[in-house]
Image (tube, rainbow, N blue to C red; front, side, top):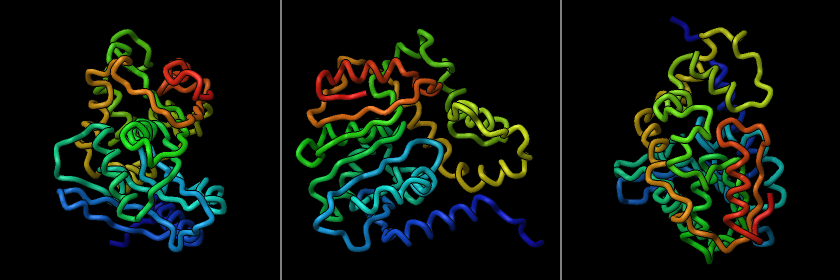
Length: 272
């Protein structure tokens, strides 16, 4: 039987073509501990350009998360765009699921490509990872941009109703959607003015799910469960780099209150 046209695969091809045209190449780094990391790196890094690390969030891989904006960065920076563990072509057989472990894996990729100094942008879950990189590798990270990332959330925030979804398992089933209705809910939560996904047929949504969401389902849910586990503001380190905080005032995943909390936590070196 002839396979139907896949919009998701077409978009994958489009984003890959865009990255290649902008001078990036796909690389695989074996960390020799059961972990393999995929990363887009400059084909010919320019000594005159600063280095910039882009860290994606949950829901998609590096291609989809940064594909629409990557062209704005490459003229000014040597851009590095990894797939986090269990996204894209990155995976591990190790049991760790924390953002600290993700941070260490990303940093080892940067070291493998001889990148000693860089700034970073972390989006949503990528903000947790980027913040952890900045805390663990202070001499390597120059500046930090955090986009809509609830770094200063606490485990009690879930119990006290700060989030629209207080059931972590329900949240995980939406953030890692396996059915069209869950994907529609994800779009509703992540867009201020969501596209009319209710008008999109199930077959088109299933195409996206098959392309982007079927791999490492339980591992991705474990990453989500690990975020709030035993999390307390007093345990979150302050980082020394200048921090720019970017937030949507109507964010329904991580409410704006968490942006103000991060700014207060970082005191004078953060801007919201």
